[in-house]
Length: 103
Image 1 (spheres, helix red, strand yellow):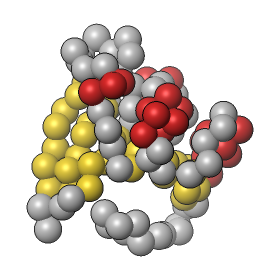
Image 2 (cartoon, helix red, strand yellow; image 1 turned 90 degrees about the vertical axis):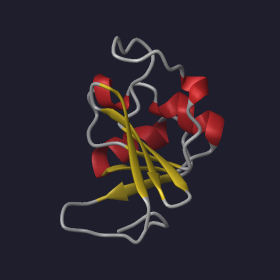
Image 3 (cartoon, one colour; image 1 turned 90 degrees about the horizontal axis):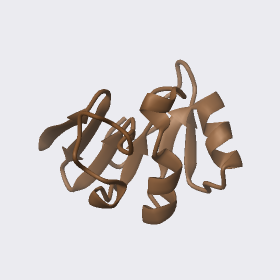
Image 4 (cartoon, helix red, strand yellow; image 1 turned 30 degrees about the vertical axis):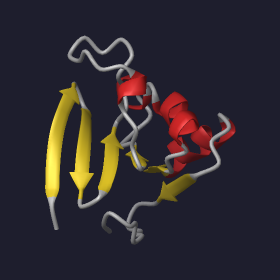
């Protein structure tokens, strides 16, 4: 298994896990720690840890543009679905799921 980490800024990271690109906590627009734009990232998956703006900020826009499934805590996942995202996987405390990039 190969694993690479790119720090984007604040709590945002781009992960490369084997052939998968994973965007963690996608806050790019307005993030003073990065020069990237939303168009610079094309993740296969998006992971969101919680619903604060500095962690979820650009999730909807990037997911709609790329079609990337979003993995998020249940309450955040419900909200993301209400924003029009169709590929949302709600994680629950104590639960698990085998995603293509890992468990």
